[in-house]
Length: 57
Image 1: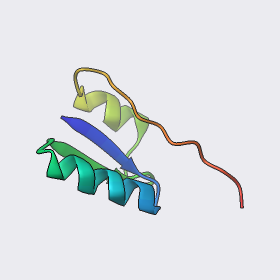
Image 2: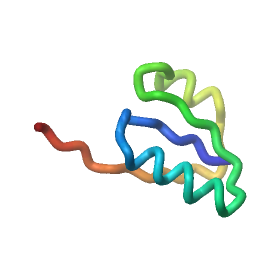
Image 3: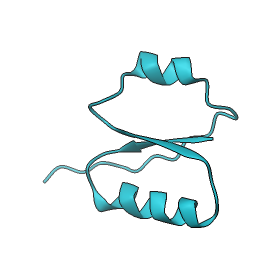
Image 4: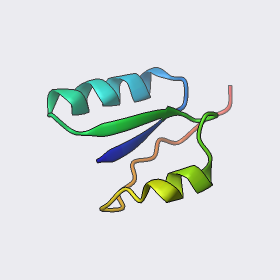
């Protein structure tokens, strides 16, 4: 299971599309719809993170 945090950009959409084609089980949340505490409660294992650097416009 992979927890995907959607930062309202096309990267998250593309990532979900590709992972879905590989048959990966995912849960997707908008970044303002889930808290760190809620993420910790999900206990997604193994703990793997994929982060995208944010940039100011």
